[in-house]
Image 1 (cartoon, helix red, strand yellow):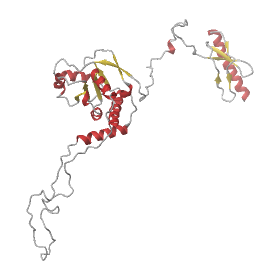
Image 2 (tube, helix red, strand yellow; image 1 turned 45 degrees about the vertical axis):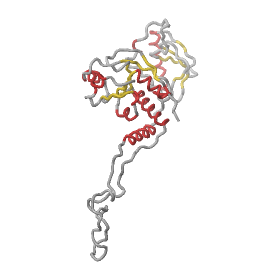
Image 3 (cartoon, helix red, strand yellow; image 1 turned 180 degrees about the vertical axis):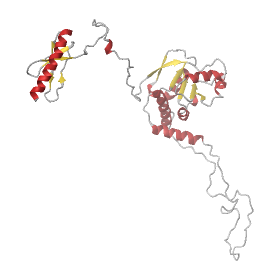
Image 4 (cartoon, helix red, strand yellow; image 1 turned 90 degrees about the vertical axis):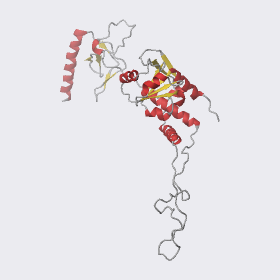
Length: 315
């Protein structure tokens, strides 16, 4: 049985070698070896030819291969690259590693999609490791600090009512009471109720600053950070902003950040749009960045934020 199989294999390789003789000369590859168990062909170098030969220690067999592994470069004189080897698929480059403090190069544009060159973003501000625990701490700190804390309830001394004892101490069969303003009576006081106070708690400045860096790095890593030359609009008409927003894909809410005071035309153009908000760079915070899926910053705003992040912390 094994002999008949070997003869069939030999005849099949013989037909292939005959085909190779018509196409191109045979090139012997002594570095090729075959495994007796698996039948795989292994080798260190593939010949630049349509045919090659290999041996198992006995008679040589001729193999047929369709493709060549020769690398064509612009300097090589091997002619045009074979069309059947070209692929129409887009080559996907590996994603960059996030959080290695690497400077980022971003294109600069404006509301008219004009090219204004490139801008280098500092890696220690826009490419820091993402930490959700820091974001959680900073957001809780922001929400607690902005809480008004004006809640108030009336104690027994603040409730309106008489101070007379409602009935005598003994003899009525009823429970003894000394006032009708107690918490057990309707319209009475509230015990241990809330009083006006501040809900703020302390978070170190380093942690707050790190939270803002993480939020900016997250938007840059997601591709949701846009850098504009400026935020100038021709008129105060809302349609100017609406037309630009309609051109954006996969964007629902925009946060526009300018370096200095907000331009009056931009403020009027965005005040009727609930999905577009404007902030100066001094007011940029973590919670506002998380509320908007797209962050648009002017060149001046980026410079001011980087300068603020690099300023030493006063102790």
